[in-house]
Length: 393
Image (cartoon, rainbow, N blue to C red; front, top):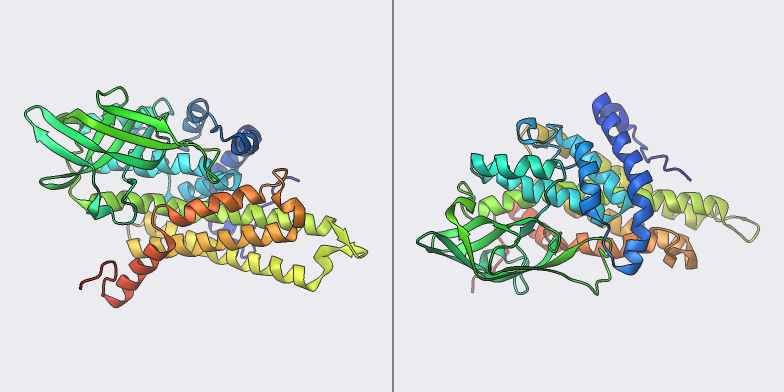
């Protein structure tokens, strides 16, 4: 059955005609051209071919949507970008992950912290889907504790020498370049490391129970020499790094509601048609309670996203507000995927339905770009003024 949308509070009335038109175009493209690829990719753990799809995404303005047009982006609103992320993750988390990484973790840091030459070289190419980047931050021994990253960059006469490893990196094995963060004698700095650079290797990470339709991998640096012109000149310390993460977290907040919407509508349609004890199971009180709970969680998440998007467009959104949306909405997606799986019974684990795939994927988004616990601590710090990230004694 064709997706009808979930909009109990008439939020569509708050969107501009352009925002709705763009969402509908993106929805049609994803349903026709991407959705048929996802289930087999997930089952076989053979990622969807983003190198083939990226140029089409570029034509639709899906990559770097909020980046100014002068650098190849669509110059759209953050709400429009959020709607794209919602539609993409309704199809699969790996699809939204690709859009989110290219936009918020690759294009954004180059746009905000790069030189004019770097912007001209990379941003239009990524926006058109002609080049693919990745974001090298997470390490085998360092996830949430970003400040203790072990990858180091040492300055030499003609540039920098990077040593270290980055793990769980989206688009790692297919990327034409990586935006890499490393410790230096002057604090954390960002670098653009191009495929084929001596001492730089990229690999695909398989045997995953989640995000199986996406390219997740590892970046390794062994005396990798990077010229000074590849350093992001305006990236200064972890504040720059975290500003990139906030872009990604914003996209996840919208994407998570895409998961929840798909799970809810799948369960609603199924329970109307599935009969037990002589009646559709949607006629039973316990089933209706589950459906109503899902609808409430989705509606709350939609309202959070809409308001946060408008704050982003006005340049007023605070990082803690982004954390609240990410934390709340991923929890909603987790609840909706699990509840919908219950409502479908044994069919809930079949790949003929999207629920078990969403259930697996949501465990990744629950963890990455800040675990649920980390976002709790971010919010706790914001409301109390007392940081609780480290033991002081």
